Image 1 (cartoon, rainbow, N blue to C red):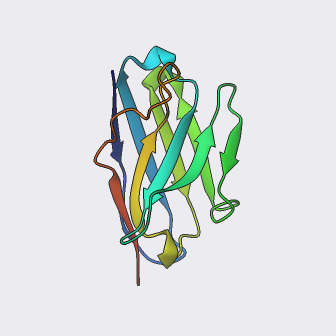
Image 2 (cartoon, rainbow, N blue to C red; image 1 turned 120 degrees about the vertical axis):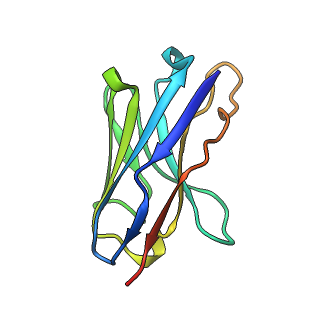
Length: 118
């Protein structure tokens, strides 16, 4: 089993920056890809960014050019650097990926709240 713990959220003004962290533990050797998702109040959870084995990255159009996903394999941690934040980025942010054998997501962590407001 894999455990995921997100951190780094907070309150920031529009145009500001935050760096989120996602620490993975447990049966992590099976993880190649990691994603960040977010869920705003009253909305469905949406995909934000992915980092694949080899460091290839992909982003949702809404965050492209503003967010950067990275990983530190030695620390089993994935990061999301968020710059030029907008009020519409306000959400709870989660990291997760699908178990390669079952295709199911690992258990969701509690997420970390990001609030962009003046």
